[in-house]
Length: 191
Image: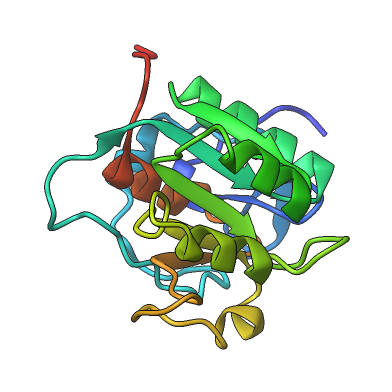
């Protein structure tokens, strides 16, 4: 397929790491999206984007400095998201599973966690409960990357299963980037 730039508000990441967009007829086309215009996203739900995402810290002041921990067992999706976030100036540590995430958390205090619930070896909820059960990470914003049916059992209230928001697959990149920008300050300028 010939490379084509698409508006960022139409961009998404499919499971498996494919980046693409819906064309005017609603068909999925795999391409590399132009992410420059993402600040123009107006928040409307389009093309299967059914998960409303809460923005942790939006009313609590400016984004905090720090690292993002990305826990995703799909290698392609993990690599695409890590590359995308790093291109935006964020420091990203990634883990392919729950045990690797816990090892990273022993020496890292992330400003935000992006967590897939369906991990190969162990359920992502174990990572969420580990985070919430440790005083130093109990208040860390955690956003789930998963299907809506999996997120339904989690809470935005209190307790070990508390989440700050979720992104339903296929990921809507502009919403993800806008939410990350509201929670974490990039470690370096990209412009």
